Image 1: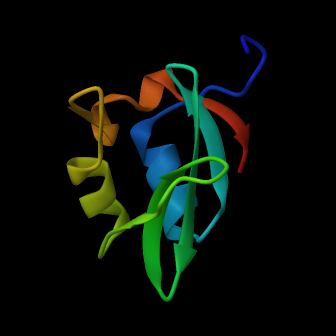
Image 2: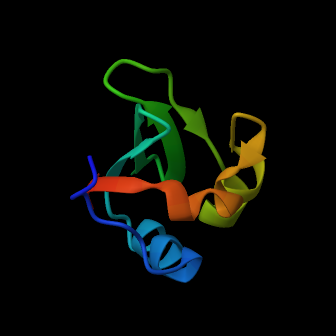
Length: 83
């Protein structure tokens, strides 16, 4: 997975989410999807994980955790499949 896209900054990720982009990525070998439904952003494990919805992208970055760490502190570890 070393040739997958790596984010340049947390701001880059936030901009893509706020624009409504579908983002699929690996973190620690697990595939995730960030998208929108009913005007709310959500994250889920792919392909069949249950969606966790948030009121805003900032709330998602703050409150959704992987291995006990919020997404906002893990963005450097994202290996982007597409966005």
